[in-house]
Length: 287
Image (tube, rainbow, N blue to C red):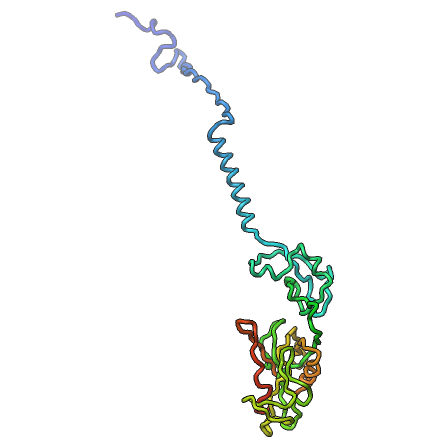
């Protein structure tokens, strides 16, 4: 038998081990060839598509923003301004607001602020309120007086500046009628009652005392006058400021001295009218 051991060689023993017992070096496969990533050209479709998306987003965003902000600058009062105040530049500010087309025509836009300076207010304007043409006294506006009237708590409705009211006073039996003291009971639109007082049915009762003995009467002393504001006094009553014609100021003062004053808010109809005055006196039922 032929001895085969010498023919295997030192590194050919089973198990890949040499005569010394150590493992032989592993066989490393060759590396694949490297692939370089090429640069994409500016004409690449995906790049152009991305740029288009960005441009469309910017245009749509700007359009939506312009559509959402439809506010404009308007002239407003910087602080509370009383009736009769001559407006100066320091009294005014511009504020941004969105008004309907029907409403916008009543107010001064910011570009016309200088036109407001020097005007005389016909009614009080609150801080932050937009300035309108109706806030000013026109050249044909009649002279008026501002008169405070004290009204007991609970004897007047909820009023806002600019509302128009009628003012009644209670006259006890034996008191001189309002018709005797003046040429009429009306305010800015009142009707005269110089010859006597009418009852609830509209019939004249003659000059002098109310019709119902011992009960007194409610008498209309101011008709369709403007309410400007009110203050609470120490007693809990209210002091109302009313704008009245010059010839009605004395009746307003007399009403304030009365023991009981009643204020009625006027509600206008579809044509902006408050209706006829109605009876200027009615039987009372005591204080």
